[in-house]
Image 1 (cartoon, one colour):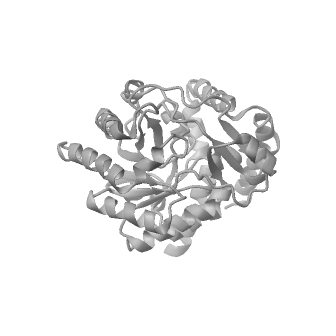
Image 2 (cartoon, rainbow, N blue to C red):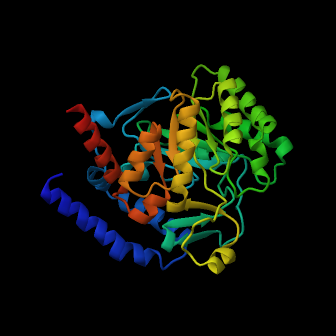
Length: 363
């Protein structure tokens, strides 16, 4: 990195952390999310602004390109599900340098999610707790947005069930969303591990998971194009539980694993216990999750002898975290909380670190 480029990055990072982030963090997380989304849409609607922003946030280089489960990714750094629940920010997030965007979780019917407040920051831990509850506008709305999306952006669809749908009928919900989104996304993620939906975790058990995977892979087999399916796993699984899920992944020819979802754990936090207890239930993301997610990536890579593609997500808060995930066996990574805490240049910083290492290895 040249001196002038280093100064540019340092200034931008310092400005975000010292000025922008403190202002945003004065507001509750959910309103801030909507404010940022609206500001992006308005700003990028100005002619030429999208190209200008993308030129500042995106690195294009052959050594950053990846081909994973049959899809060509312009870079290995993607946006995790949850940020763009309704497929309304695909172009905007692409302009911020992400190599792929995962929308959702999408459910068959629109639903409001859990009661507010349901999203909380833990600045002392560089973390978030959320119990959003699959709030989204439903399948039809997602399809309407996806029909208009840019085709040169890699988009994944994270699918789930409606909260009021019983686990006995859950397969129908997953199949409905899978079939509905099939023409419009590049890959799918089966989400049975979110800790914010009552009893959803039971679908991680062998029988429930098998029903879902068998149904959607049967539908996929009837289609002219075979689109990749990934399973998103919980960081709270024991090794034996994880290995059981990997058996199902192998049995149904699932193309990869996303490791991991958020955690129920509250161990090792710096935030006051009374504050944690006042927040209540929800999935924890951010820095405290990193070691759990990293270990899960290692376990999966070792168990599958590196043959199963892994998308690593959870606690990636620095460039070194991203490199560690790739070293542990991940093919791609996703960020969300790290993006919130580090700002809009975080994706570029990670890609620069990856590219720097790739170039040094090549030389």
